[in-house]
Image (cartoon, rainbow, N blue to C red; front, side, top):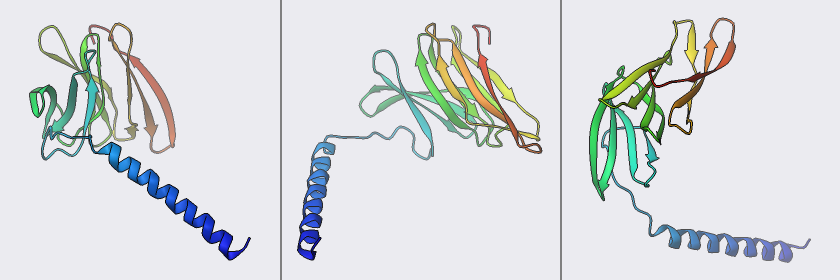
Length: 172
């Protein structure tokens, strides 16, 4: 291929890239964002059956659920106490309401928090000794809204791991 042919191909590629970038900028113009919790590094978003967004996050030792009432107006509720440094690791809203998984900073505990008829219920899904670590959990809700949690348990000295699946019933 000649130098002129290479220059033509490169020019065509640059024009195509510029066109894609222009389209992306025009279509992104309608996007907006709202601050839900200032000073919080990490949270998860979920939508209920009506499309109403909620955000779960940890602030200090409190697991917080914020539900959008209208634009830039969020109702917040501290739903559980968790160890300082914990993070929300999974969040879903099902037939029985919001369900959140929080993990301790040392990767040795996983808590499930869900709405009950009176208040909130916290269930210790997994707690391990210093020898073990827990992997990032997964959360699914069955058709009745009951949680199913998956996670790994890693044994430090042997470097072996196990994948575990827990079904949480109505009682916890």
